[in-house]
Image (cartoon, rainbow, N blue to C red; front, side, top):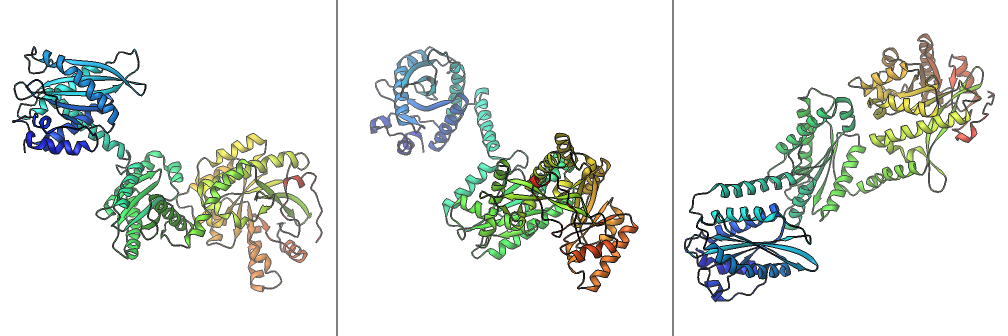
Length: 627
């Protein structure tokens, strides 16, 4: 199909975006017998428009085919959707046609020195420069005029004519497709290729080469708009990624993420869309067969296993765990935002089950998801000073005097009442919230100690509970040092309480290194909840322990369970043999306190002595307990 046959078709299509009436006579005046097929011309126009508007910042552009005969108004090909600007552009370009056509006859070099015309007009008080370029066509007396409108500042001379002329010349060579491609034509192809690369870069995450967040969302929204296909919306989150970066460095962290991205691309079925949503979070949109919950469950399981195998190659066998949450379209939701929310809800349920798990959204997850709001409430509570320490006395059972305090976190709600710990225990399952809680409580406790305790009882200790995330962070020791320096608290007064489970989770030695450094600086280490985990005796021999805290479960059975009492007495004898002081927790009766003292337990705490105290009760606190 030549231009004469195809031009009306192109006009009908373009008319939808730019309504300018054209008569059949004007359409018939476009006669380029040797021009490329109409589809090629349309493609060239679109390519050229995109190149020019990107390179020159043009707000609108048009292309005029000028026949050799005079007296005809040339037909219009435009690719701008701004009707008002397009009409003004058309008028401004037409005003330049006469002078340009006169000049082009004096250019024997086949358009290489094609003239340029610049006119200025205002539209809605916005100034535009219009650049018009005449390019010689393949037929004698036939020309193409390209015009573009560029936003301009009043009185400012633009440097675009040369750039515009260069692009127009490129187009002149491409138009006559049978000519040899000149260096200018090659430059147009290079510009277009560069634009394609830029477009690709704008849609791609530079680290993983997956779709970036915006591109992923756009493609999923397109899938939703199609509406006919069932699919799963999947979120994959790397467990403990902050610690991975802290321990092994950001370079390893990047390698880790790239390995996961590569595994996702290889595991994802045909038709899937993969993307990096940010940080250590990945997204996946997977086509599903109808009733595909079982299929999805199997796919999520394969993803977890494949990721673990991929990370094992990096010689870090303790890593490679991800948590995955998924929702389904249209079963669970019919919009992108809701699908994301419900997949995130399922992800939270997976993390709540112990991490390294996957979950497909179920209505029961709504209740669990609501607890994720706790994070926002927690940060707000820190700002409003609603997170504060309470202090439970630790008593010398021989002298019956207070020798220190265990620091316990309390959260005061908007009514002024303390929430019970079970209401905010979820905070300690999120590494960022857990670390924030420890640092908040630690600083407040050191401050309260300095104002209420240190002046009258300078030798009393403070016991701080820490989490797995704290001890896995190489910066934790420096955080403690900063808190001590800010409050004039002393290392010698600090006891760090570590649970057996935390020691069991030390697969790479980082926790042991942190504990050793804390002890080197003067802090003492207490093994908390002793007897409730596994391998407790090994911990006593392998770890630098100063205090052993006997769990309340043993104390409760004094006087009612002979076997438990026998185990308790054996533990006390062993600890004394190792020269490790024992603290019995949960003492509630005078009988328990007296028997523990007689069996060799030197220290105790519990409601027999006092409930956890607010800081205002510490000044002058020195009761002599009776039991």
